Length: 271
Image (cartoon, rainbow, N blue to C red; front, side, top):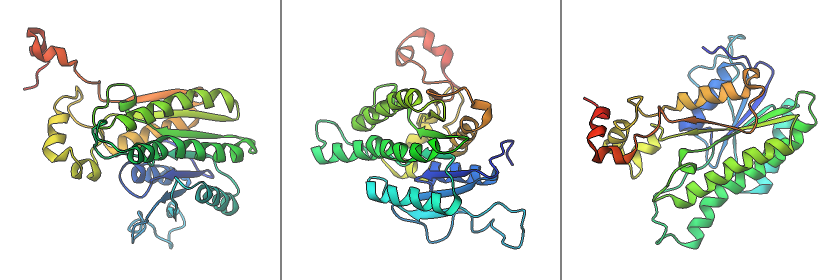
């Protein structure tokens, strides 16, 4: 259950078929929104196939999935046109699609670096431009949310291009918030490492996730639901003055590395 009400609103979540994106989509669905998700490939079963009951008129509407490569501008145009044609509006867009595999900067090929920047910075900017055009025509405007990363705010060794792209996203959030106000609000959510299947299966691994969690003051990693709830808040009327903002979700932050080498650092060690 959720305290937020998005009844009558249309929401698009990119990369919304799994992980963080799926949690965000489900949260908006349970809050009453008509939710669209997109991804390069779609799951065989709808994300909410087990909860959708067509016989129950009070049940939230099923999530609508559309296969879309957000790096293809023509595909984005078709996606936005279809959503507007089917619902007549677009109220919230959550640019969540992104990511990058581990690669040391000295060894990354130009093509690899370009692909990371294209997915994590250029594609969200393309989508924001197209969504803004729809929202500016609406009496109530709309909200553009970007899922960022703390990698934009600190060193990002092994994912330098990704961190640089996310830093660009945060600057874009502030710039677009000025250009597209007052009709359209723009904000970002920047989590630290989130515990997802993808995080477990990549270079971090289960043991790596456990070790990382031990360094977080909150005592755990972020969950997809933590990011989803932040998105609900920022898209709601409760955050009507939060434009150009970046909500950082890092469980209290990272204990400074220098403390580990000092006597003072003993006070921060966990039992």
